[in-house]
Each structure stands twice: as C-alpha cells, then as structure tokens.
Length: 394
Image 1 (cartoon, rainbow, N blue to C red):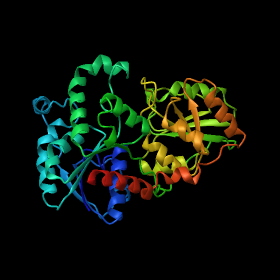
Image 2: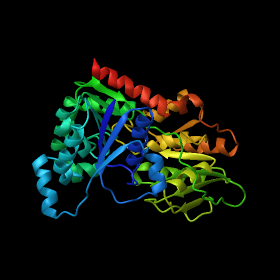
Image 3: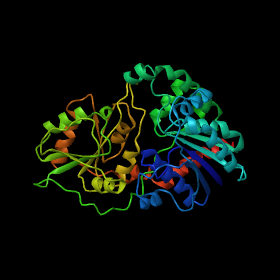
C-alpha cells in the first residue's frame, strides 16, 4: 500500500513524538509498504546515527523549509485558519507540498500525526487527495477544558472554541482516528458526545527495539544501592514532590537518579542525584543500568488519566521493573493489575510508592512479562493498525 504521512514533528527533532513517528513509519516501511513522510525541516537535535535508527532508509522524505517569520506573518495565518497554536504559519505551504505528494501515488492512505494539532489540520485540508485519511492524536485535544489545568483556564480558555471546532472537524471527517490509550478514547468520546465512537481506535506506541547503546558509563553511587531512574524532563505536573517525599521515607539503600532537567530542586542528599542528559543514547544507557524505572504520568483533573506515555513503552523494552505514578483510573493501573513487572503508585496515596521501594530494597520486584512487552512490539502495533485500515475499507 501507499502511505503518505504528514507530521509536523519528526527526526532529527528531539521531541518524543518525533521518535514515535519514526518508529511507526519505519515499521510500515519494513513491512513492505511504500511510505512517504512530509515534515518540517527541523534543526538537528539528535545525532545523525540516532536519526538513521529511528527512520528507515526505505522511507521517502520531503521537507517543508522552516523560515524566519515576523510577528505579523505568524498571526495572520492564525486568524486565517482559526488555529491559534504552533505551526499555523506553515499550513499553506505544507498543504501545497502534501497535496502534490499525494498526487504522485495511486489510492494513497493519508496519515497525520498530531502532537501539535496543526498536523491534523493540514490533513483535513488535503484529505480530498487521499483514498483514506487516518488521523492520530498523541494527546487529548483540546486539553484546557474546565476539567483540566487551572493554568490553561486562566491563560488559554479563549482558544477553546476554535480548538474544539477543529477537533470536531477532524473527528467528523477522518475515516478513522487513532489515540494512544483507552482513556484518551474515553476523552474524545466524551467531548464529541459519543458521536464518533465507532471510528476512534487505540493504537499503542512502538517501544522496541531499543536504541543501540552509546557506550555511556553511568556512574552509580557508593555502596551498590538500588538505583531508581527517571529519564527525561521531570515537569511540575509529573508529581516531583510525591517522588521526593516517598524516597525520603524509603529504605536507605534506595536512591533516585534524575537524568535531564527537573522543574523542582532535588534535596541536597546522596540519595538524590541529577545528571545532564546527552541525547537519546545516553537516555537508553541510563535506563538500562538502573534497577527500576519511574514513569510518571502528567497530572490531570479529569478524574482519570488520559495519557500513556511513549516512555512507558521504551521502559518495557529494557526488561527492568517499571514503577508508574498516575491516577487510580489509568492505563498503567490496569496494566499493573494484569501483568507482572509493572508496579503502580497512586499519587494520592502517600504510602504507595514507599511500599514499592521497600519491595525493591528487598529484591522482590520483577521485570515486565513478555505478554505485556509484546503489545508494544512493531508486529503487534501493525496488526492493530491493519485492523483499523480494514474498518475504513468496509
């Protein structure tokens, strides 16, 4: 089949969604399909060798140049397209390039990958040139409803009607929708009054194979402690205070390593260490040398967690116990009940993470079982995707 994908983000951008796009399209290309990626010409944020691992050489790539724009050139397209967010200034040029690319193929399937909504907006404008259009939402959209973060209510609520209109258009006009978690499906069903529930499908991230080691030697503290690592930006919304308080109450041989930026200052203690993160290979090596990994979902006031991060999928690939922090009503909580190797801590339960760390101290945590890991392998994800295609063809 002929697949043409538009994604605002893609390697060599270092964003998490870029890696997800690369892994998914590479799986399609390696499975024998013609895959053509149209994306922005991003500045290099990852090593060229990493880009080659994430993007199969079988993928045809067309780049839309990124140009310097004045304030007026940024805002006029926002009003023109009623999209007040990242990338509106590239809609017109991207539509021209994407339409021309689609015209090269017989019965192309258009895929759009939205970490930024602009990808799906561009897909909406070009959908008539494709045999099918499958739109992917990496996150709930719009995310700043009255049930979400107070910051968004105060700062961004004026944008909600415009974003809701685009969300409705995409849900209505795409042949199929894919999202990354069951709770994300619940979110989109609720905001669309279950009007499009038959076309919204769950498609997990691809987490394997892991990146080749970069040969980084990750320093461990003296005394051979149990190292629990969090790799990547520890944002204020990912429960850093809960993590710190829990480690202060945990057995003394359990230490916390933060790789990358943290929005909170960690205590000045030998039990807390912060390391600079030098790219995806170092991240892989850091995770591989830990005794357990922390994956913390963003806080949500929906009453449930509508996220399942790609970091969770990557953690499973390392055959190390995964400690998940989230809402009680979340995908990771479900996994912890069904599979070994995933340990869940409700951030509202002060003792939950401490109890898990005590088990780690006693050597009682197990690695994830194969049945769970297989859900995030390329073959499994592609089989689900082909099922989505089959629904579209009916």
